[in-house]
Length: 111
Image (cartoon, rainbow, N blue to C red; front, side):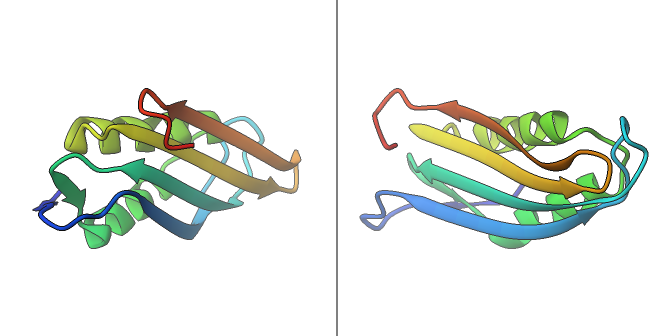
């Protein structure tokens, strides 16, 4: 994932994206998802175009919501090493209704 050097006084970033995932590997049906990423940057910012592309590629593979959330968290965490990070996915499927998965790390109290 491409990153951008962080030189301004940005204290937190919030990114949101709606996506249609090809298939829930448990319910074997497509699902819609609202992805929210909030992080407190160190010295790097994520390139949103690359993040969009990553989520779109992830959405083309069979997955469960919790795994997609963990995968996105790991990519952002590994690529940026942010001070604080939260990834949540609110998904809607015909098999399970609305469900949410969340993974967070708040050592510096951004929440």
